[in-house]
Length: 606
Image (cartoon, rainbow, N blue to C red; front, side, top):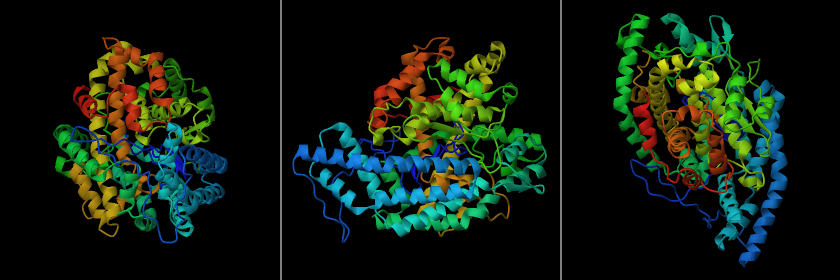
């Protein structure tokens, strides 16, 4: 695939997919500058490996034009030939992916699988890879846009230097698994139900038996996919090992320029830093839930929380959904983005936003052609959950919309997955913001202000809950690829108890972990949600204090000022992938990525 970005809402990662247009095998990597990192910073990134790497037996010799001018001309010609072949393939492939997710029809799934394999096989050709390595090994090129493309293409070709037979096997399994997820409807009380129905029960029902049945139904898909998913994990590991990596997880982190050891040191720091606040929050939450369901705190189990994975903070103090029940979420989304300077009417016209048979139950934003055809898929219901989804997905969409279309095709993408997640999370947060609710949802100002403290606590709770959930996912996925033959069912609940404090059901031994779609269609992705949250907090802080000048009415200006859109368009979106994500963030805020703004959000949201 060309580009898949899994989507999780902000502030609720994991429930929505960003874009089903990237291959789970190897995303087009992002390049970051080497930088030191400690507990307060980010994982250190590995420098780009632009030079030659050990050649496999029988691999083509690396040759390159000798002079700098010749190398530059050769690279420009190489990219022109590649794009002439790749661009129409990716466009056709993305259309097949869109229709497969829209309809669930086998013909589109088969067509997307065929095109997926064809695109991956293009990047598996050893001769073009050798040509690029030769240019890089001879000194690269002086033109910064060409050099940037060279680095990105080297990484992409490197990831695909596996046999066509292995590529085809992976594509076949991936597509079959994705089809199962798209078409699966859980059995509950003798009928097939949607994910929305399960969420409704877990949100609204006060009856423990009904909640337990809904929660168990949400895990049924895990048993359907676990066997094939493990086969895919082993195959991915086999392919990664053939390229010299310890496993697929380590490979994907390196290709995303993240150092695994430093990343998990950061996760350990986040665990320690958020645990006291989370423990206090959860003690209070468990007391409320025990009273609501008439059970002892010690008897609370996963089905007593408000979603299947406890990745969302249960509603507390303020009921937000009634403010949206008579609203058009499309209209609210359009009004907001128009106010801050983005015209999304054409994007809404291309979207598919409501439930239908066979349609994927998730949500994502997809750039079809890197030239303005941008589409969003949702399954809207009039609730705060789906309002946050719309704000989030169109945060991705305006990023894609604003990338300078004069850029080369290879660079007409966001700087990194975490930068587009940051954009989406920045806006997804607003569905519980008092100023936004007054300006767009029509909530009377006095009512919104009266609720603002509770809404702030809800926002802080969500960040806490999602951070603890992200820790589960990151640790689980690393262990999955380190040893797919271990007792993963038990490991899953060990991690859930460790990071989320949710007790496992007695006697349960089932592949509950496999019911999380990201392991299948968006592997090694979850760290980007966490890093994206940090970047979103940093952008928000910069907008409030430096762009809008702070002050008592700053939030009212923040949710309605064209200055917000102009800043993001000029300083974040337009440059696309011409800069690595670290340079992009420094261009926007003048600082490297820090955890301080994120920690301040956790501390000050009430």
